[in-house]
Length: 423
Image 1 (tube, rainbow, N blue to C red):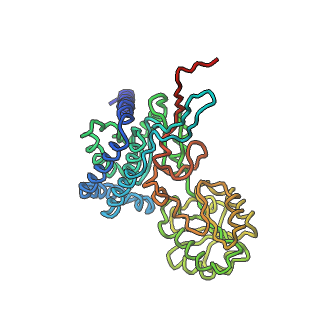
Image 2: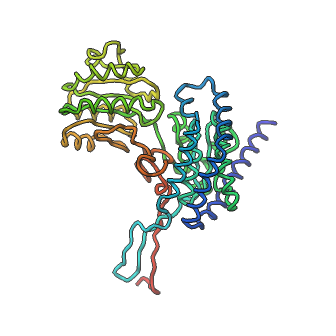
Image 3: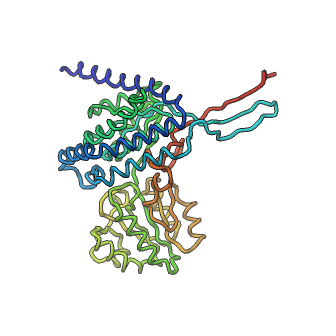
């Protein structure tokens, strides 16, 4: 096939996806909250029933991706328990209050007109993601819960897994004449992404989830609105006022770094106040014992035998691996300045026994999620009671932090009068 013919075929494919999604979103928008809840419960059941098929598809992806980085393989891999978690997340989304039609604000104007600000679906949402097959279902379930249609563009490394999961979702929707409410882009050609993110008036919002390269490519190509799930260069700051919280600080640091290293809410840098440097004697040994490579500044290396010198690139890197940069600071303001310089506005944490320090840190860091005396690993839609998340937005407009079904709605103003005319 010539280049021109292939280009025309891809354009026709993307046009068809958008046309079907637009038609489906109008149908989904007419469903009731209970109807959408019922469909989601059926989807959870279908995923459980198809566990063997889903795992077989995932094995194909893992076999094809033998050369992928370990962090990506970890995100790609499924197991019976992970498939069960995917189904359980759908049920949790199903059982949440229906966001569509809820009144955000309502009052009676002096002229007697009733004014209401109501949540309504956004429309058609394009979700672009890498590696994690669970996003296929999380995104589909959240978009459906909020009355939207969705086009899913997964990474080529998870093609078979994503297809198996999307088939499970669509098998349920087909019984309700809504199969096109969830569509998986059936090609790995990157040109399809460029075409889709420029479909103004057809697709209402794009949500990219992935590495900096993906986010940059989508943001620069898109002419439709984009809500970004950007890098997770997260920090943990151990304050000077630990006052008996040393064991808690060590446990939080270990959990935040080693619970899962290949995720966006794991810490990549540990900041330690100069007055608390002795804690590194114990913490460093425990981290190294868990296989973490330490890269530290000069003052911290005195407490961390075997640590290599940290560079500015280390502090700017989202490792997604068992590597931790460590730096010493002399004040909470210096910690916040370091985070402002190198952070990604995702998740930042402090361990302190001082309420004043906690408040200064919360006010001093510009991040979607701020943790006080708890692990950054709690920055997660499931942990927040959202059932799942379509992403953790590091933007400031429309949505910020873990995005649940409510964040996939917009609003409209509804005025109800009694023959009113404006004088």
